[in-house]
Amino acid sequence: MSWIDSIKENLTITTGDGKQYTPSWLNASKGFEFQISEFEFPGISGALIKRSLPKARRFPMELYFQGDDHLDIAAAFEKSSFDLRSWTLSHPFYGNIIVEPMGLNFDNTEYNISKITGLFVETITINAPKTIIDPVDNITIDKENLDQVFTDSFNVIPSSKDINTLVSVNNSQYKKGVGIIKIPSEAENFFNLFNIANSTVNNATANPLIAMQAMQSFINAPALFTNSVQNRISLLSSNFNTLRSNINGITDVSSKKIYELTAASNISSQALASAMPQDGDYSTKNDVLAIIEIIINNYNLYLSDIDSLQTDNGGSPTSYIPDADSQISLNSLINQTISNLFIISLGSKSQRTLILEEDSNWILLTHRLYSLDPFDNNLLLLMQQNNVGLNEILSVKKGRTITYYI
Image 1 (spheres, helix red, strand yellow):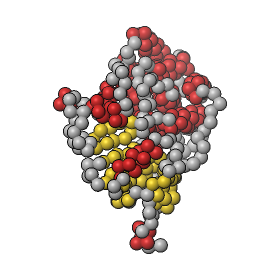
Image 2 (image 1 turned 60 degrees about the vertical axis):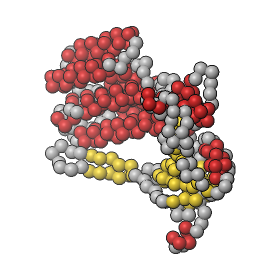
Image 3 (image 1 turned 90 degrees about the horizontal axis):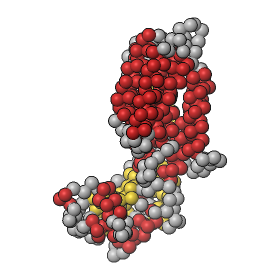
Image 4 (image 1 turned 30 degrees about the vertical axis):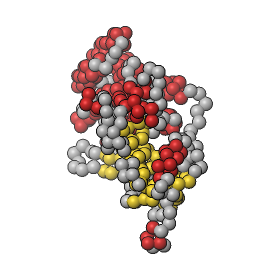
């Protein structure tokens, strides 16, 4: 079929509640990325790129409802979007696609049309993983077991260079970590773990396993701070970058094993932190997806790192090959964590934006988008979500983009 014949077909959107809409549309486009691993090797310029399967396709959409009843149809479309089930697009160019809307923007500044823009992401139809026990408990137990598996595989004696590096890393992580602690008892515990880690590391040549266990406890601590998931993950991600900053100079087997263990403790701590949110941490899908992206990116960097450190074989005393059981356990924990986060995202709110058709104020907008409450919680929430400054407290001008969540 030629593109001229295709463009004559209607775009049909079947929303999660089963209703169908046939809006006009413009600017059809799609895009996707591949799963990529990048490997760098000491002494070799450039990088080896391994490309795997494609990720989800993304479809930016520009939709229009027009006619005397366009406002009513747009309102019905907005209401249908509240249903959390997947949508089906029957697109003249791209065929039938099952998608999830990442966000919808409603623009009624032109009075004779309703313009709706948003990003639709193709989703697979496999049922979400089902867990028998509470996922938080499961991740916590698996994290504890994982730490034990890594220490069981630690079979080297740290060098004096390793000890100096670990002490430097501990000092850096303590300075950053203490800055986000809000509770005095947590600050005291973190300081004690810091002192124990440094003390045992300085004696690591005599008791390497005790030193590594103390390092794990210190690295893990920020995952349980009383702070938002975003702040804890950000701190752990920064600490991970600190661990990685020394990787180019790693040549000894002991240094490689130490990086394998300490960096894995950090990555698994990110998984643990994500499973223990504070109230309001995962209020929107974007909040959850941001955490997923950070964990996956850091885990992929870790895999690239240990792959670059690995030798061709294990046939000599200077050979290094990552412990298989440890890596399998870490991979299982990360997969379980990501699955749990995707389940959380299905129940989270989606971002919406509205371009004001006329001047308004925050009380009217709250009544329109959230409804008013006796203590003005919704009013304050809407103002916070839109970063309201002093010049907007009393009135909101026409054309202003209002962000809200449903």
